[in-house]
Structure formats: structure tokens, C-alpha cells
Length: 171
Image (tube, rainbow, N blue to C red; front, side, top):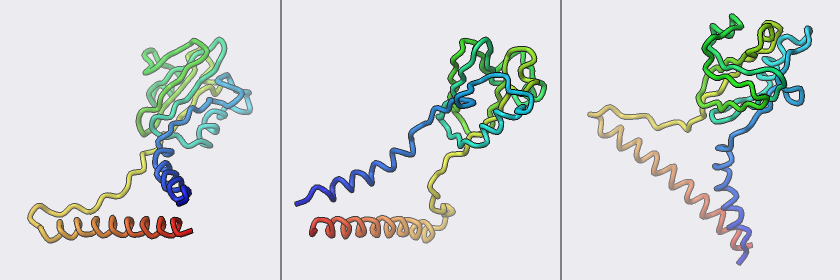
């Protein structure tokens, strides 16, 4: 009996877990978090737009003699915050993106934000499998039909897996 079918089965099961891995993004890549050159004022927003951020990913800021602040949209527009949502100036800051939506970052050093050291990150909504339609409380037939549809789908998947393994076991 070959162990190939079992190895393949466990490989298939592991694909589900790979999607849960979070990514640590280095802001600005090798350039890090610094005042951009005059012709690159939108450097960080371009960088952010070329990445796909998901819930639980982290953004890693590396900088020298600077700081990073997470701020509100209004504070981002003003390039100023007296009470940021997050502030660090230790040269190596990591922020966890813990929800879907927009995150606003600026430098806390006076004048740096105005020169383009700011960024908006959009975190995507999680992709959830579609839920079967819910039946109204008084409609027992619709609820039974929905339950039967799930049973049929599970049965088809089970038959497919059994045929697949039978094919490999016979090789």
C-alpha cells in the first residue's frame, strides 16, 4: 500500500491553514520610513497600494531620528496629532492591523508629514464562505431544503474523496 494518497490528503488539508498566516510588511521596503525625495511625495501611498493587507498582518517601520504615529483621518489630512492612536520613536516599530478598514500613519517629526512621510493602508475584509440562505421561522420546508442541500454537498464531497483515494490506492 502506498503512502502517497495519505500524504496528498494531508497536503490538501494543510491548504486551509496556509490562508491564516499573517504577513509582516517592511514599510518602504529597503528604504524604510524616511522623508521621501521631493519628486516622490506620494511614495508611501504608492507602496501601500501595491500590497494587499489582511487582518492580523503587521507593518514594520524602520527609521532613524524619526517617529511613527497612527492617527485619525482628520489628523492625517492636517499632518498633525496631539493625541495619536499609536506613537513610537525607537527606530523599529511594528503595528498589527487588527481590523478591516483604513489605517492612517504620519511621521511625528515636524515638517516630515508635509514632505510626504505619511501613508494610508487599506486592510481588506476577510473572505468568508457564503452562508446558506436562512429560512423564515415559520417556513419548515425551506429550512429542511437548506439542510438537505448541505447534506447533498457534503455527500458529493465525501464520494469524490473516496473515489480519489480508491484510485490512488489501486495504483
